[in-house]
Length: 155
Image 1 (tube, rainbow, N blue to C red):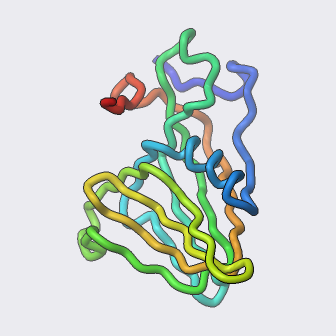
Image 2: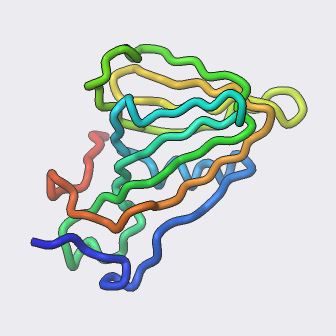
């Protein structure tokens, strides 16, 4: 089986942004169940930027009935980040694979606040931000999900 392409599915790669909590909910939905090695997190303090290179499940794919479920490599970038903290993950374990469950904006004073990235297994990343500015952009063609299944969440 070969990888699908955006042209075959008549779909375009995602390239969206978020400047408020409602927009960030869309990004959170699209990145739910994304997986990434801990080595694919980058904090650039001078640029005030935090980025993740994710293997994102394509929840928005209307063609899942025609072909196997797909993932795509995506870049999730947060600007205006003043600090980064983590909880429940061993940042020294370079073999660690993390799974993103949700992304949430917690407003503070003025435009400032915190971005909470909740991970499977009780892990979390908290980004202290001067203002909310996020971007999600697909950077590769879709590929068949290794499990050949959509992620499931027990209710």
